[in-house]
Picture 1: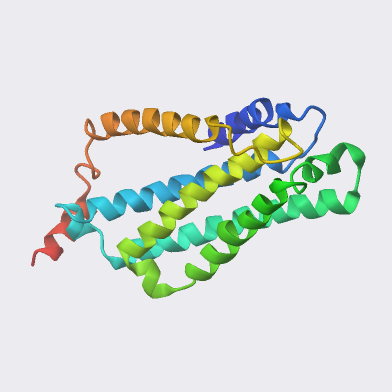
Picture 2: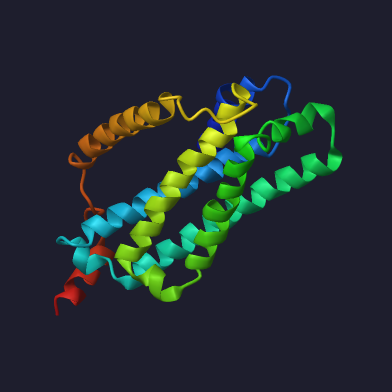
Length: 218
């Protein structure tokens, strides 16, 4: 985990912050990392929703497991919102020319609408929905929320990167906004599935798994 945070910090600076030369932020790499954790949590919930329909996961995964995963998803939603708001508040209050232009480019024109969309549907709505305990215990409903959060991560990444090239307005005709994510997700899914089928779904020789599985069939 330490190595991951270290490498992703440099990757965020080189891949994302570098497209806006001279813009400083010590919080931005952490915001991207938290977003990746949110994305991974959403994927784990969706995979759990699929696997719980089959043996042996239907015996090992109960509503408490999904409840815990739902609470983790809520925690990452809150943490992303807190970090993003903190960065905005510090930069906006400081109002320094070398810092404030990053946000000005992302609230002008159509980008401001996207920023409002993110505030509502990346934080406010998911936060409110995930406060529901019955929803977090329902695999189907929780998976729908997780899928929506994965989509919102894509919207957030577009809002973070695209204004660096088109600060005046959103260009809906840029076909790469759709094609590149589809291609990257397809490549990632192919690697994920190929690795998944080669490895055990549960930890082998774990006595706790054997006990839980045995109790479920008593």
